[in-house]
Amino acid sequence: MKKNILLLENKNDLNPEFEFVERKWIGHPDTLADGLAERLSLVYSRYTKSKFWAILHHNFDKVWILWWASFVKFGEGYLTKPIRILLTGRASTKFWDEDIDVKSMLIEESKKFMKERFPMIDSEKDLEFYYLLSNKSSPGKVDEKTKKEWTRKYWFEPRSLDDLKELKFLWSNDTSLWVWYAPLSILERLVLEIETTLNSKKFKKDKPWLWSDIKVMWTRFQDEIDLTIAIPQISSHVNNVDEYKYNLEIIKKEISKIFEDINNNKIKKFNININTRDDFETCELYLTAIWSSIESWDEGLVWRGNRINWLISPMKPMSMEWVAGKNPVYHVWKIYYIAAQRIAEKIYEETWEYTEVYLVSQSGRYLLDPWKILVFLDKKYVNDSKIQKIIEKELSSIPSITEDFLNWLLLY
Image (cartoon, rainbow, N blue to C red; front, side):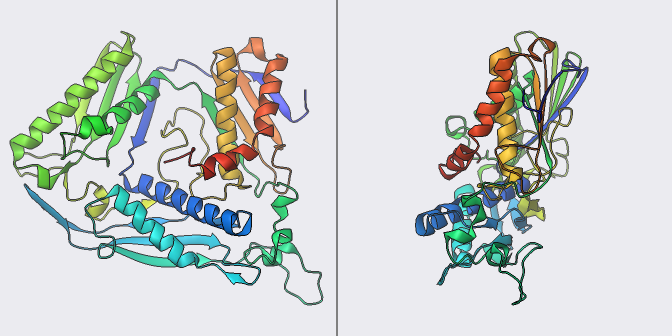
């Protein structure tokens, strides 16, 4: 067994009395920011690889989508102030002697993305952009004429492919920790199944009032589950309070049905709480003009939302930073997050036992050889050579993560 791979007996409580799971759906401001950051990285990566035969250096992982304002009442709704989008991060703006119009590329793609998520907006009138990207290098760029020129000097303005160090030696760009686990709990599966159903075209076909800025918090104490869900309705498709209440009942019945299909009598009690801030006397209800709370002076920021399995599960191990918008070639916050997930899932498929995988990177180290690898699994597999082979195989396939990203197979 390699010295940097350690297999240990799982000591965690696999059936805790308490469990909490949160999920921000695709219309939530934070999920929107994640999705936009990832889309911009995808478009930039595809363009530079097609044009210059390599994905040039970039990070769009600091995107903000800021508040705007709207007018809503029963039967009507529209925006009154534009959506503000802050495009921040870093990107290569030149290759050899050819300039790259990054600004136009990102703004045009942002318009497409927002129009896809909010078909009723005018992408020219309702979007306002602030372009704050830099092409400055990290520490280590040498400018003195008396010094030997390092490739770091041309990090965001490469003269040729020779200035892209990762093409010769695929390296880790940072020192940090990633963790993932498998399988999902019943509660986690329930969260995803309900979104898959409620967010499907089939379910929403005859429900124009329903869209995607939904936030859920699930709690389990022993064999009792409680759900609190915030689900907006589109004001132009709701004519009065009675319709609003009726729509909520439709959602409640559907969630109950999904729960019964998945539960298999394992959970004895299930309670649903919907739109708990609604005040029917004053008609202070969760109505929106374009399907998102961001129209009510909210804002979205990359990495404040879901983890890579679309969930926020604080009772399980989780890494703090996020993958969206980061360079898909060597940025460990993207590569190792996904690698840890895949290793955990493959080991679970082999053992059918709960597994946790921890990967620790070291800046400058070969990307396919993490500095430390720690796996917690059932004790009967601690010395199993098959587990070692699974880990080594998944690490050797790390370059395929970049290709999956370019083929839009990972996120959003």
